[in-house]
Length: 404
Image (cartoon, rainbow, N blue to C red; front, side):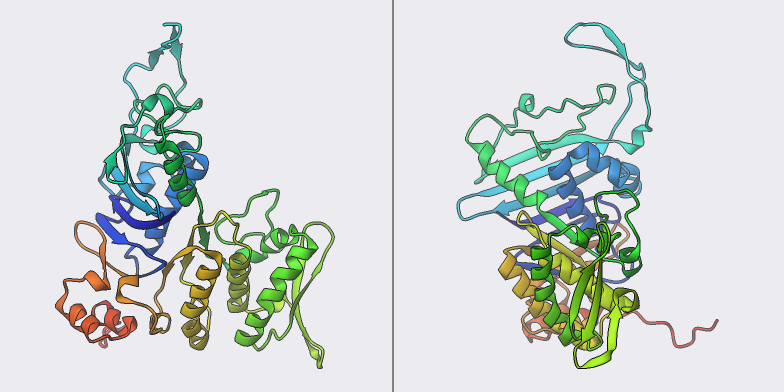
């Protein structure tokens, strides 16, 4: 299954936004318009599908950090489609509340149990409402099958959802279909390596974070045959885009760590290790490595500003390269960018660019192909490149009379 439509309400700085999604989507907008937060909403849903609402809530800081300021509710709606089915799933969350009497009755024994309160209520998101439609037919969610043995009984509201692993919509034939949706959402993969973090060590943590911390330790966990194959795929790309790295190789150190280096058999002075690589080279290495090692379960790749630290000529080649990756890996991509060079590719359609706008009611946005702005409509009809269309409304400059 593939995601075909996404809707968000009161998520962080967003008031309401909805958009269609095909094979790829480029997200653009001014600084602080919410490009990162848009990716965050998709990551949040992915975390729910992989580890459950409670774990996702704890990692993301609860309503205080996730809901739009002043809002006690937030909503997500997705549509996922395959050749056989179309599924619409809506999840509405609200701020959890604690009862005034912290003694609650156990339904099984009718005994009184006291639960210690170890969290502020505003840090807990609970279910406000869930809706499910399969092939335009509303499915009644049987709450007896949406269960969690770790639910917090003292909380007034459920902190587990239909999207949680192990939950079921019903005992009927609909469940295998919805399971495909869960697999689709759980396959979200975020790529945004930080060159400085890449050089740091994990320090006892096994799992990587979102910024590539411990990259060279994690690379060392791959068996030799797999790592050889990955480096062989990356090597020609690095050589073509970074002349200072003509021949990428690696060697293993003691324990779980590798050193990436480059040498040129024809030049004894060309040897350099990853400690000497520029930030742009390290970040490109991290992005390429992550793309080359995507798990087979990956369905949606989120790339944040892949142009960072890269030369304009390299940036202009990214759209066609990423399209090839998406096709070969059979994944969708959502890519945020500030770069006109990245949007100058003639293969990018107006229906593949989401332009964010900030308003008094929160950030919203629209696809260029659906814009009601007459300037954008005229430019799209004239088949201007997306970079020029975006520039019509997104130009922000330091005033010429500004002084320090």
